[in-house]
Image (cartoon, rainbow, N blue to C red; front, top):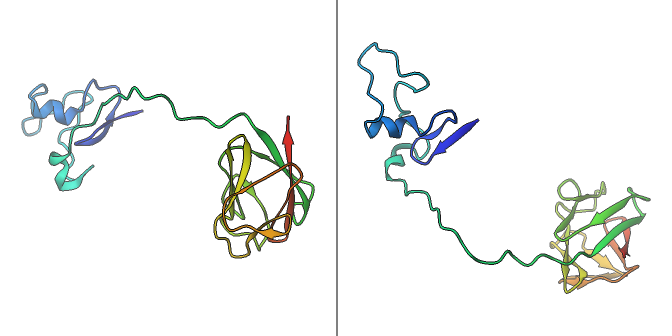
Length: 172
């Protein structure tokens, strides 16, 4: 395991502080030619490391604590996309706030060549699922209508992306 010094980079977590900073502050004696470095401490700091030649000018780490309340969490709405038609027919995908649908990137992966990467996103707003299209090449359709902005979804809506048709089921 390693600790991290903002000026010199990673160092052994068994040490109480960055060995290079300790040496610069005189808490560890510098090694005379040929002497072995103190146990666990390297002989010299790296010439190029975190921050490169500007490492000495690095600002100190900010330790400001914020008393702000945690961000608003979406409600406990649960739902699924049930694949009615397409390459993934019969599969069920669990939905949650921030679900990304795509061909090879996202939380819902559709092995459909007409699905973009990423294709769409599902969020929870005002206690309901809302679908966003990511300007996908082949579009996103809800009940046969192409969406071009956020679209609130209802139980049994049919969502088509590429050749895949999914049905929204809301779980209670």
